[in-house]
Image (cartoon, rainbow, N blue to C red; front, side, top):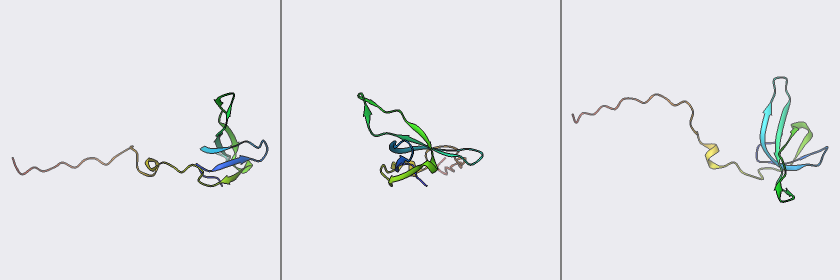
Length: 88
């Protein structure tokens, strides 16, 4: 099973890149979005989607997740508690 940030290779086409996205469907299909690290005609090669079972991990943690991805980045927060100010 590949993780985001792993370098993966599609066994059928030979496409190699970094797993940058993952999609799970209702009936069990898991697909990986793979971004190539190569260029073609001076432009980035378009990201491709492959079945996870069709991909093999070439290098684990080829691109480590940024530190900001490991911390909570927004979303619902607990309600603030009122501050009691005795100086008034």
